[in-house]
Amino acid sequence: MMRKMMLLMTLSEAEEALWAGRHAMIVPLTDAETAQLGRATIAVHEFLQFNLKCLSTLQQVLESTGDKEERIAKTLHMLLEPARVAVELQDQSRELLGRAVFIGPQTEKEKLQ
Image 1 (cartoon, rainbow, N blue to C red):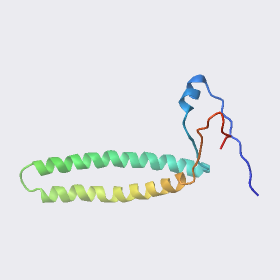
Image 2: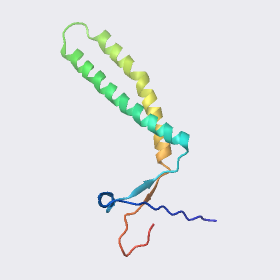
Image 3: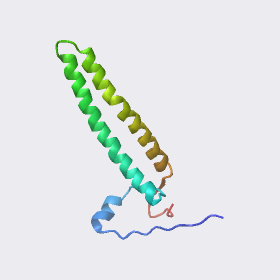
Image 4: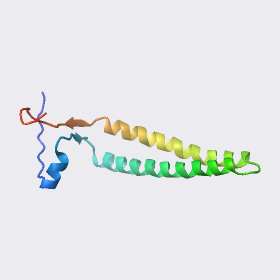
C-alpha cells in the first residue's frame, strides 16, 4: 500500500522568491544520520583545506633547492590517512543523500509531484 505524505511550508516573500523555479530535496534521516551527515560534511571540508595546504607545501618543496625526497615523502604520508577517512565519510554521505526525493518545480498547470 502506498502512503501519501504532504509537506507544508510557510514562506516569507523573500523565501518564496528563493524557492521559485527550484526543487526541494527531501532526505529521510534519523537523528543519528542527521548528525553523521553534518559531521561528515565538516570533516571532508576540513580535509580539503588540509589537502590544499599540503599541496602548497609540495609545490614549495619542488621549487626549493636541496634534498626534496624526504620532505615530499613526509608530506605525502601526512595526506594518505586523512584522504582515506575523507573518502569513507564522503561515501557514507553519498549513501544517505542517495535516498533523496526531489520535488518541483511546478507550474500552475501541473499537479504537485
